[in-house]
Length: 310
Ligand SMILES: *Cc1c(COP(=O)(O)O)cnc(C)c1O
Image 1 (cartoon, helix red, strand yellow):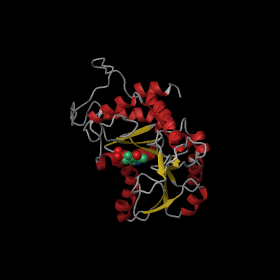
Image 2 (cartoon, rainbow, N blue to C red):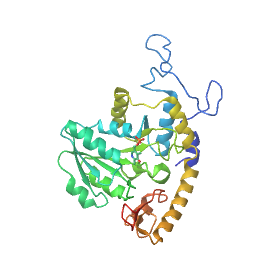
Image 3 (spheres, rainbow, N blue to C red):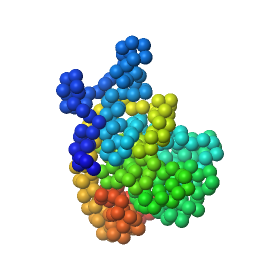
């Protein structure tokens, strides 16, 4: 990286406003931009297609993931939907079995209806990914660490396996954020985010993003972003940019807190099992240590008592 991550988080995509010198990037709250003469604009035409505040967020997200291109969406699921727009009827997707519930729902309740087929595999085991692949497989959909069981997939190994077969690799990087993990550097084609979570970080915006280094995938996704229209408003883009400025310091604290919570729970007599990749006993501990800067901040656990008593 040419700049430290925290510097990019504050400045990437956000030059000082040339008109006023404002160091905080403005909220361009407009639907339409002037045509100087018919067909001639200053680079922006209509707010669904592009907006300067959104562009700042898209460039910032791309910079944090080490990507050439970024696209922002109205929610994480809108970002996921746009990746699925690349598919057609008859295509097949192999996805992590432990997966965000909303991803499972859009796969099985929306895209299955249009003739896209999904197989769910334990992607922590390469041989299970291999077994699930068919001649129609177009996408390998990975989530690591996964929601809610914190399973760790070896992203570089899974991406090598998929790409050797011409299969595109998507990684949902919401739980790790680009501060902890950069899947494009490990071989992923597309990275999706719910920016609602750590990236915005203040529980006041719903948003999503896709980043990629692939020019052709970017052109297709940008087409869908405009053609489908699930774009975030400029105010939400501003709030997300504002949240991202503190991502690094927040993640350091989140990770430290989560480790203490996980260690407390692991030693507790009423707790049956703790899922946290930072614990040496976690099956994905070594892979997580290799591919992440730190272990993340989501912890899940099982109580010894039955569900009712819990
Ligand atoms: C929340 C979440 C999503 C969906 O994002 P929304 O912004 O709620 O639409 C996708 N993936 C993961 C891992 C999530 O936690």
